[in-house]
Length: 240
Image 1 (cartoon, rainbow, N blue to C red):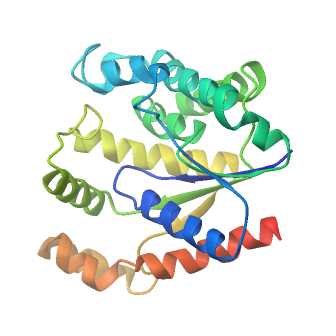
Image 2 (image 1 turned 90 degrees about the vertical axis):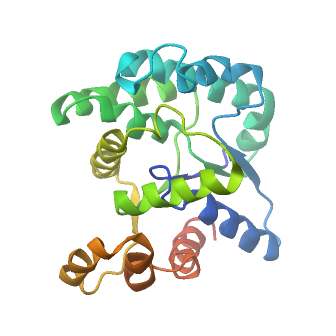
């Protein structure tokens, strides 16, 4: 079997940026790998996902229970594995993916309390990895970030691209629950947590947060390059 590396985090956490950087570094080193991103919005297998996120089943994330919504995303991943990268992976290939089963842990686990989440996480991993037969990740990078900053980044991205928010992105309370669910899943499944904020001066961070996201970011958010250095070192320990 190959190696499956997952980049995970709430919307606006910087996981796509880190996926870009790691792929550039691997390519520069001559590494053979495949890059994936989920959901695959341009593929027929994502139809139910698009309907769900577009509000066809309800205007709020909680309108669709976690188990039903998880099955939408799992089907898209299964189709991708069978049609695209399964043979490459089973042949020993290195796969880098922006989101995976781990995203269901964040976004669907956000719909329930801590105790229910633990049962949901167990069901989720058994469902996708044992019953469906998708491969388990060898390493999951989880990018932990302040929720207010993540929301600021998403707003700036929507303004830049002219896109509108889906039912997940419209709800700040839901995004906060996603962050909590993500940290709980990281602890339960031993993900590698990457803190996007500077470790020093934690008390001062809270004091400056009221000045706005840009001031907060300038002072206390780690640069993408700094985070990338940490990620690359950890990844090379696994694949070397």
